[in-house]
Image (tube, rainbow, N blue to C red):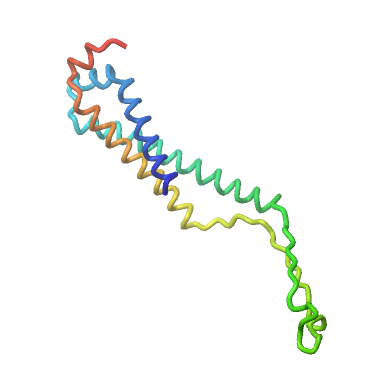
Length: 150
């Protein structure tokens, strides 16, 4: 959850920074007659596209790394002894002693629900960041935006 929150905040800051760098462009569009909702829709659409692309890249990388772990992951061996010792019933503890060895392969299972959830979080992050950036862009006055020197 902390990683998702951090990703949301980073996306928000990057979108606000992008809007800040495009002040003259947005001011020109507003001076040409673009309505506030059209400006918001433009910024949200751009951020949504970035969220979808980022989510798809993340899913592909996640599945790829899971496959890599499955292909080259080590097999671990664990041993444990049960029973044993000299203090069993009439000294027969050693008779009941046995060693169990088990091998565990390191795998990274991939569930489709987790992949879809990751994609959904990326898309929602794009929408939230786009809405904040679009709201900021829509509040600009065209004259102030065009007067600003880069």
